[in-house]
Length: 383
Image (cartoon, rainbow, N blue to C red; front, side):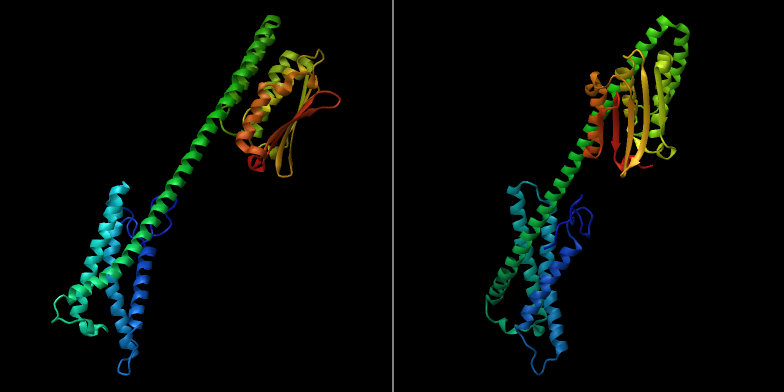
């Protein structure tokens, strides 16, 4: 019978009907039915080798006739099984009896039509001697004998078709379920990333406002200047703080505004240098990671020291990966910076976004301080 054609990922064969009663009737399946009919016609005609008085052309004409007669039986069965497969209820207790009835009725009708055609053109058929119109019951026996052969062949082909179509449907449902599962996992991952990122924003703003409050108590003029710096910082931060990705150049601008705020409070106790090549500033990076590293260096490394310290920010392309490094000369691993919320969030976001192809390395600096290095895959570093 015909092979299945179902909607969805498993549908790869071209069908005659996209939907409706004949959905599942494909060119490949119809061609297979035609091939079976041709093989059957060759088998029948081969039993009648051309005689001296029969030309090869005549033998081929007889073969074509038998092929056509085989189609007379096969086509009704094919159409009946495809239509019944589409219209029958899904419950096996109703579906399979309906398919069996469709095979029996269509094969009986097809065989009867073939017998009638053979009777009309009896002179062209090699088994003319089987006909004896004077003997009652011969036609019935003839129909019974042919129907048993064609009926069994139709039943076998129909079973193959039903199994193939059920397999295709199961494959399509499995593929759709896999797509739904992947889509759900992606949505859950996006929600998790948004939650992790949302933890960073209030954390930074709380620290900044607390610092501003302390500065108002000691130097109102400096506090007013710092409010202006904070406004400029928020003007850079807010447009892309909730974005899924940003550029390294935007992150550097954010860090510069952040350090300018802290420089007003710490004065000469805070020194910093930014060494990021222009060619890398268009690289795509996750937002707020660089800021978190710099905030960690200021809060846990430099701010607790009376003399403060220095922060260096650099970036380079190494081995197809983008590395962004934040080093400080602060207290080093004596501070709890390595286990803070900010670093934990960075590691969780990197794992969710890139798996094992991205990482955060934290090591001791010389002679003192911490070096934090972000390693991002080349896809993230592409411009």
